[in-house]
Amino acid sequence: MEPWVPQISINESNDRQWHETMADEKTTKFPVEATHIMMFGRSVGDYSYEDQDFAEMAAPPTFPQAVAQFDPDYFLRPRIDKPWFGSGKNPSGVEGKPASSGGLHAEQHFEFERPIRPGDVLYAAQKQGKTWEKESKRAGKLMFSERITEYRDENGELVCTARSVGVKTERPVDRG
Image (cartoon, rainbow, N blue to C red; front, top):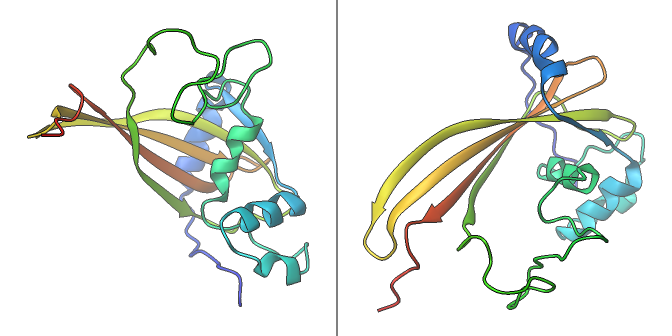
C-alpha cells in the first residue's frame, strides 16, 4: 500500500504573518520520530508503516493530534500532582460534581501543505476560530466553537492546519 501524500500549496503571505506573531503565541515543540509515526499508525489500525523505510514514511493524516503528548497544559494529559478526570464511565480522581457538564468533539479537519516526516521538528500554535449557535429540540441551544492549530517547521513554513470543532449543550439531552 502506497503512503498517503497530501496535495501541496504554499501561501507565502501567511508564512510571513506567522513569523511576526509567533513570539506572541504559546507554541508547543513537536519532534517527529519514525517510531512515533509507526506506533500512531498501529493505534489507528494501519500496519503498513512496519514495511516502510523510516526515512521515507509520511505520517498518517490525523498524526498532528499527537502533539498533545508534548503539551504540558493539554487538559486530557494526566499529571502526577493533579487528579485526572479520566475517560471512563466515572471520573477517576475528581471529587464531587465536575466543573462543566462537558461537551463533545464534533469535527476535526487537517489541511496539509506537505507530508510530515521523521526528523521534522514542528511547532504548534493555537488560536480561537469561529463560534456559532444552533437550536436543538432535545438539548436546547448548541454552542459550537472552533480551534485552529497551525503546525510549522523550524523554518516557520506552514506544514499543516488543523481545525477542531467542539459543541456544548445548553442543558442535558432530553432522552424522552
